[in-house]
Amino acid sequence: WSPPTAVAGPRASEQAVQLARVADGIERTVFTWCAVNTGRSFRLGEFTSEVQAAHDGYCAPDSPARLLRLLRQRGLVQVVLVSRSGSLYRVDSVASEAA
Image (spheres, helix red, strand yellow):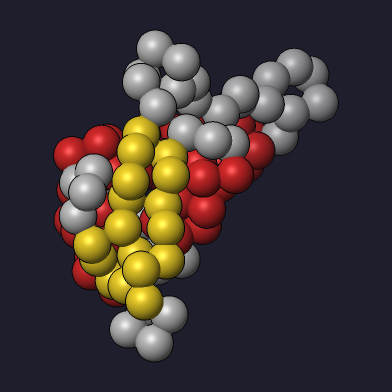
């Protein structure tokens, strides 16, 4: 796992740099949550609450789910939908942090 690349250089706005810095922290929290909870079934609401609590509550409500989807797309976590009607998901595996 590697953090997102921060925007840098003369054209980078301060906002872009700060967004990359904050996203890196939340993304690490989401990745760590997945690693600790591999094999556990969960609902997105409880996942979001736990990630926000682990990140001291300083993230937008949709950020954990968005970053979970991003990590899944990048192949860093494998999350499966266990029950669509129950909105139940499960973390099946997590890439090693060295990847």
